[in-house]
Amino acid sequence: MQNLPEVLLPLACLPDVEYFVWLSNTAQARLEIHETYPKQTCRTRYRIASAEGTLQLSVPVIRQDGNHTPTNRVLLAGTDWNRIHWRTIESAYNKSPFFLYYKDDFEAIFATPPALLMDFNFRLLKLCCSLSGIRTTLSPTVNYEKQPDNCIDLRQSFMPKQPVKHKGSVALFKPYIQVFSDRNPFIPNLSILDVLFNLGPATADYLKQHELV
Image (cartoon, rainbow, N blue to C red; front, top):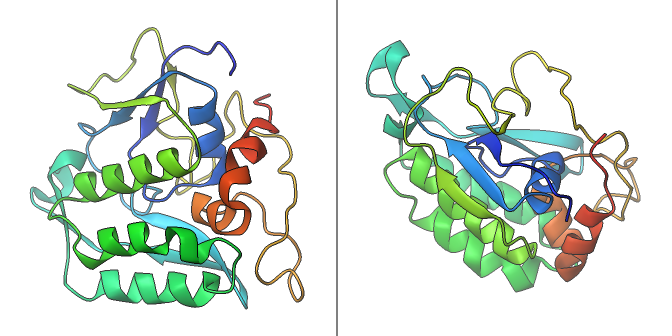
């Protein structure tokens, strides 16, 4: 593990590989929950591999306070999206080597999601960290700081509306065999789900192979 300072990350939903490379290289990570919730970002969007290529899934939400809603007050919307998401994930990965080993844990979260987006994302992140061998301490922010001290601020660095280059990004993602490798070229930096279901316990080693430059 690199000796990195604490990192400040967005509270992402099943985020990409680069997000977990950061988590695997620091002992402490704070997850932003007091920001004014930004739409159309990694907080509700994640990408998986399908037979047709990259597929983006989006979690529907309700902003209780309109445009001024903080992330920790954003509600999950509706009752069907979770079943649709899980069926889509199952269809994409049911032939992957490790889907059967991990499916029950993920299915349980999707089957009975909590009321708040914050709680849903936290549950998935903790599960993904556990399965990836990541022991990083995850803690929510206690207030919003526009310019935080003594940490690496990555809140706008993962799947924003307009991609932003940031210090410490992964220069090149190492290929591995994906479910649809027989028909599609390797798709890098998908949701951590893709690595877990395809590599299983080797996910930890895969993350360690990537340097932040």
